[in-house]
Image 1 (cartoon, rainbow, N blue to C red):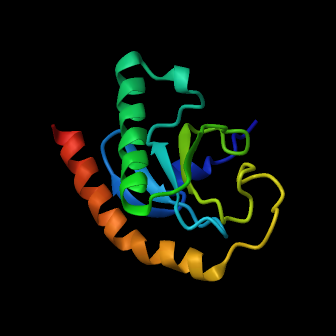
Image 2 (tube, rainbow, N blue to C red):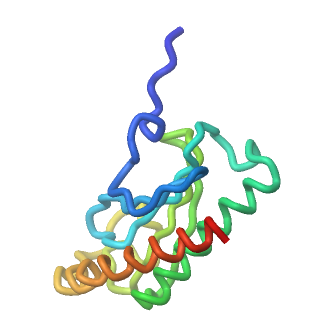
Image 3 (tube, rainbow, N blue to C red):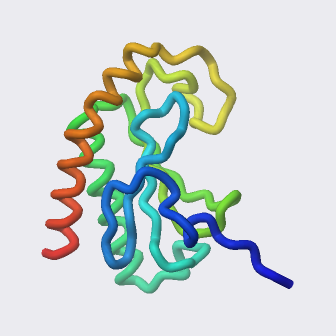
Length: 146
């Protein structure tokens, strides 16, 4: 039986923000959620427990760096973290800045929309992303080497 090609092995999985030896950070194109990031493990593993203890710590430190940058630059109402892998069984963490005005808040981003997100507020967050991502690149590079 031929195994299907894993989309996270075949491509970055979104707008590449930073790539290191073990993982990468991408911004996902998720309508209504301008600050939806993923920390993607570069090697194909399905589960977090597939990593050794050192790699698990490395992965979670990267998730924390992304979360801290989102909090610092965007001041969201909440950060959502998730590692589902139901659709793509390749280890990746969702790191999502949530705002009380977004279409789904307080429900998960995968739930039904409760209202329309205000375009002006989405645009305001979008305008902050270049500075956020420059900071994130610097922080991740510094963290990965030190």
